[in-house]
Amino acid sequence: MADVARLLASAIVTQVGSKLGSVIGDQVTMLCCFEDDIVDMNETLETIGATMEDAEKRSIKEKEVQLWLKRLKNAALDISDMIDEFQPDSKQTDGKRTGILSCIDIARKITMANKMKKMRDQLEKIKEDHLKFKFEPYQRNDIEHLERETTSKDYDHRAWVYVSQVFDLRRIGNTIISQVLKEGRHDGDNLEFINGRLQELLDDKNTLVILDDLWEKDDSQLNKLKLMLNVCSKMKVLVTTRDEEIANRIGTITPCKLSPLNNAMRWDIIKKCINFESRDDQQHLEQIGQAIATKCGGVPLAAQALGFMLSRMDLKQWKEVSNSDIWNEPSTENSALPSLKLTYIAMPQYLRLCFAYCAIFPRGHNIAKDNLIHQWIALDFIKPSNMFSLLQLGEKYVGKLLGMSFLQYSTLTTQVRFMCRGLHSLNFCMHIIETHTHDSLNMMYNFS
Image 1: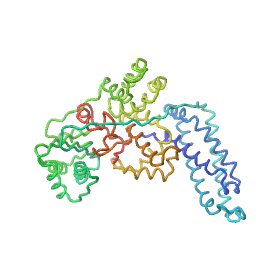
Image 2 (image 1 turned 30 degrees about the vertical axis):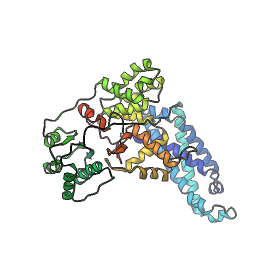
Image 3 (image 1 turned 90 degrees about the vertical axis):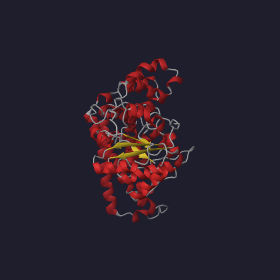
């Protein structure tokens, strides 16, 4: 989504506010006479942060609010950078109260004072505009992780490969081998070896291979792909692509052009996600839920994301979702974008930075979960808790992003039970193929 940056403003404001609070009382800030400035800026950001939900909601239609959010985000980042410049001094002077002023370079102190004044003036103007817009505080329930379970199908071996725009025969072959062996990543770098290994593993085996989101049009590359997968007569290969020309080139039968989900199917996906049958307010939610289902563009991804979001909302919040101005925004790129945008707005602020950080990875990249969690921790995106360790909280964050369809698992091993129900799990593979192609949006990343 092109305007996710402005929606990220609330997460950045929260992060910077926490950073400001951590340096209040620091020796260097006090001795440099910055203590009052830091306190004032922190209070200002706290006041603004309390109404960020309304600001983001209004920014959909009001260009002035969009620009204000952009200025706020940039100012918060500048403040964060300025605070970082304090840290070396704080460490060097820790415990050295006597004569500490002599350790601080006077020229640098003047420079910092000028920066502080600039930041305060900038934030004051933002605060004035904030009062002018008369934003209202907004309450939102947190979203809890839902467990997902799947069952197997009638094949000896199954493999799901996200091909993406970067066509790599070695990666495709290695991914299939890894999923068949279920022993972690396979890194054969020789196509002849990979072809031989596939022949060895899959000969005379009933195998299903799904090649998701194929973009390659070069006939020579497609022929090599067919040759690699021509292991035995029991091999079945299903390919999803957005290009009918590619479907005609790669297919051995007439391509099936899939239609969007109808309203009943969208509502059915949402009902499963919210455990509709167990709710006491079914009668009141039915009509509103069906109205929401008609707006998600016929895409399973959108219905899944909406369902996860709605699962922890009450009747009033359902009405707000149904009446949201986001549905009126033009979305020529993909009909799932309004649904994903609503889900993002409902995302807890502590998750927004974690999710936005995933933008450093290229599209279709396999992200190592544990490495990603450690990076979140190193960047201070995960705050300590009395009940859970930082690693446990990171696991919970991953679970939430998976439930919202912003992350997905890339393999079909035992980790499949965390996949989004009714969308990516192999159990629903044939249902998906019969209803709609898998959407590979910029907002989604494969997860390993």
